[in-house]
Image 1 (cartoon, one colour):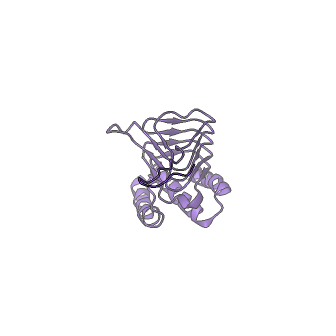
Image 2 (cartoon, rainbow, N blue to C red; image 1 turned 120 degrees about the vertical axis):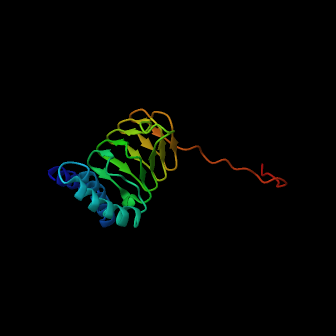
Image 3 (cartoon, helix red, strand yellow; image 1 turned 90 degrees about the vertical axis):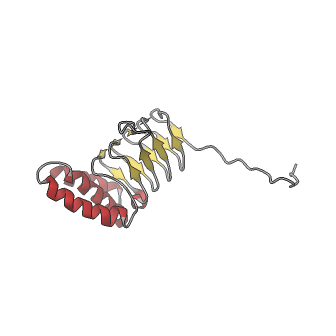
Amino acid sequence: MQRLVQDLRLDFSVNHRLLDRITVTAFRFNQWAYRGRLRPVKRLVAKAIDALWMQGVVGADMPGRVACGAPLRLPHGGRNVVLHPNVTIGASVTIYHGVTLGVYGPDPSHVPTVDDGAYLGTGAAVIGRVHVGKGAKVGANATVTKDLPAGHTAVSAPIQLRVPKGTATAS
């Protein structure tokens, strides 16, 4: 219980909106339910909160088995965030809405590790046994399938304009 309270204090220091705080509280409660005594009772309550709030309201899949440091910043309430249960997330990480941290292939150990201070932009996908280094940034809608060194930034390719057939091109 002490760790739950400590993590929430740190989380609340970076999540100021009510939506963000409710989501991070539901996530931390779910994590707490996987530790210590009375796990069956705590997990039953956590599953209800998960079904009602996480999946029902914000559409997120953030299992309690995820190893995650504090503070965790969830702008926009963690809407549509999907985390594989075996993912490891460091402290002071920001996860915007629509982020996926997922497994590649049938081996459940092929999941990402995100180090302290990383930033995961809207719609980012980090897939497979990938290491996102300390302070690294993944831009909006970027897909990362290879290690991202500390302090580096991954962005998606710029758009390519294609002129429709039969249309004159401007010089």
